[in-house]
Amino acid sequence: MSNNRPHVLIVGCGYVGRRLYARFADRYDVTALVRTARSAAGLTEAGMRAVALDLDRPRSGARIPERLEQESIVYLVPPSSFSESDLRLDRFLQLATVPPRSFVYVSSTGVYGDTSGAPVDESAPLNPRTPRARRRVSAEEMTRVWCTERCVRRVVLRVAGIYGPGRLPLERLRRQEAVVRAEEAGLSNRIHVDDLVSACVAAVTNDEARGVYNVSDGHPLSSTAFLLKVAELAGLPPPPQVSMEEAQLTFSPERLSFLNESRHVLNGRMLKHLGVELRYADYERGIRDSLAGWR
Ligand SMILES: NC(=O)c1ccc[n+]([C@@H]2O[C@H](COP(=O)([O-])OP(=O)(O)OC[C@H]3O[C@@H](n4cnc5c(N)ncnc54)[C@H](OP(=O)(O)O)[C@@H]3O)[C@@H](O)[C@H]2O)c1
Image 1 (cartoon, protein in one colour):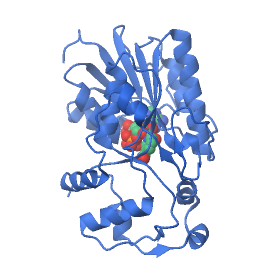
Image 2 (cartoon, rainbow, N blue to C red; image 1 turned 180 degrees about the vertical axis):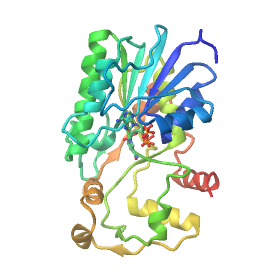
Image 3 (cartoon, helix red, strand yellow; image 1 turned 135 degrees about the vertical axis):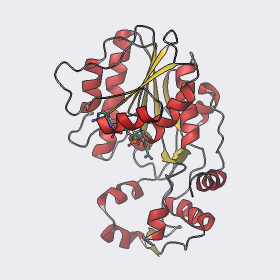
Image 4 (cartoon, rainbow, N blue to C red; image 1 turned 90 degrees about the horizontal axis):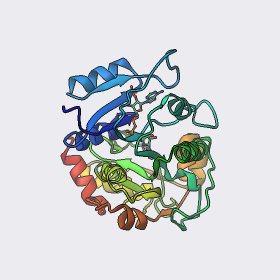
């Protein structure tokens, strides 16, 4: 690892961050920040540079790993569920003293709320309906203020449901967990993890990138249709289907919060302005490759 290469700090290095680290490693000096010493040890064992810092309980005098020649911070830590704002991000921004050239915040398409299946681009009004989505809105605003005050190029990626190797609902299918009938389920949106990583890379390397980008494969379909396709391609029996009325009585509030929202997330700005070339615009191919890479 050469020390004269520009530094990228990946804050939150789990499913997405590990893949991002691997993509960055040949041109940047990369450091990963994670919550637990155990995760940091796992990353170090895999040849990555990692430090542990719990943003819920930062040690007094805690410092984040920064460099003067700091290219970018890519922030992937999910907000905690303890408040309406993102306290982890707030603590992180207070600790960050060296402004990077760019700050990439990975948000969620949940900020748009329910549009009854209507298309949403980045100019659509925000209508967060869950505490989870409200924390994302507050986090986006926090990054706007922090970056504006420091003249840092800011990119917000509003990410759809992530899938990929090891992130397919195979356990749910094996358990024969019920789903809402395809004809009653609303539209949901997805992105393959490799394409999300491409969007993160473009956000750092494309100097023109700034503002908000939706990150999805551009092919909305119901979560039921997606699950049925996964079952078919994985050779598993299709899940039992129930009416939306029954689902409202029997599904967990968390599951219902997703099912009660329907939208079509447009990705034109990501393709044209950010310059992302999707490998998996075709979700069927994405599922096939994910299964092949995991079983
Ligand atoms: N799942 C989806 O469909 C979806 C959709 C849109 C957006 N997103 C967002 O995309 C981002 C990346 O997702 P992912 O799947 O890669 O997440 P992940 O695998 O759960 O990784 C999260 C990382 O954040 C770290 N972290 C968590 N709490 C922390 C804390 N208190 N202090 C410091 N670090 C902390 C974790 O550290 P440890 O490894 O030590 O635990 C881990 O490295 C997340 O913000 C997620 O909410 C997900």
